[in-house]
Image 1 (cartoon, rainbow over the protein chains, first blue to last red):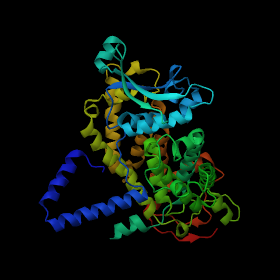
Image 2: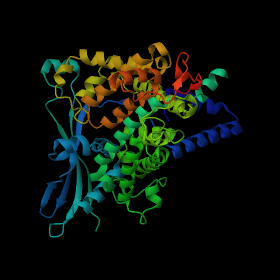
Image 3: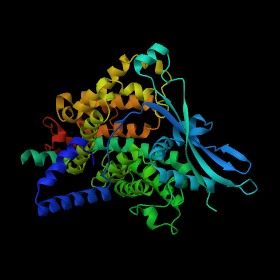
Image 4: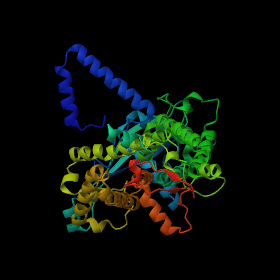
Length: 166
Length: 317
């Protein structure tokens, strides 16, 4: 699980050359090791900033009600104190990174937001909208040339709109 | 075989372990406080990640029986106990069980420090981190602040050695992945891209990295530091320099980047277990001449490096 792609390829090629019984034993041993690692918590994948983004991006998560659309007061899209930003919100970035790549997670999160922000006496939430905003980064040379590190244009896409559960 | 036995089964100086325990325990405690406002949102069955999909968690098996908040309080109590070294082994096991449960309850909010804590606590379950600078040792020694100098009372090295090996493997594994996954680690732009990222950076002067010269210097220093650490840390002459370089890199990350602070500090905390106890005693005696690190019993001169397990016969004062 921690092997670079080319090493995985070599291992797979090796597996193809084994006899069916040999391949089974090899796979079974691999499964046992993986199961042990999973249960003991040693199955981590270490990347440590292995892949860097070439654009800055952020979600704007909105709630649509009968009275209109509102930006929800969530950690990465509302004013936060120094303490909140530095200490209490420290998992939000990773959570958004996972939201970015995981549509079922966005759906589960939308359901959570509907429950969390439904207030008696207020217009009910009809749906949750995930709006992606992004802005391309300039190369270091261009950043020095223009005195900024992002392109001037930023882009917006509506990724999902999840209706609230009835 | 002789080297194998000496490496894995000799006694390990408890002083570096104590420093590691103090740093890690404090870090875990702060983490718990930071998680307090979101504990239920992150880890409950109806939280941000939806229903539990992984059952390898005590939260899953006790749902509806034990309130989730109670685990937060247990975690806080265990991390205080772990830090001060009171019932150290029991606190370690409790922290490990809760950490595993946190990771498995909601994979979507797992940060690097969760993985590091889990790995460190797993190995710590097999050793006694409370042999020095701890309430356990203080009570055992008749309420005197002591570090046992009798190496026969030291914990056996193998769990610590496995922890060291696993820690080293993090760099052995991540560096080739970095090189393969992103050309920025080869052309020197990796640090620039981190510094200008709205998600990770808290550095207020990104302009310093425009042009890419500073980025190249720090990127290549990082690559050299991470690439050489797994080798140089095992040799007496180079160990402290490689530790210093890696600690500087991680402290730099803690200052410049946000949302990875606990992870990067957990890596720094782990570096204590690589520092020879003899060297640490020297530092501590300079800082505290009264002798927090003075041994209970006088040791006969220990040949070379005490972490290599040369058993010294204790001589009573």
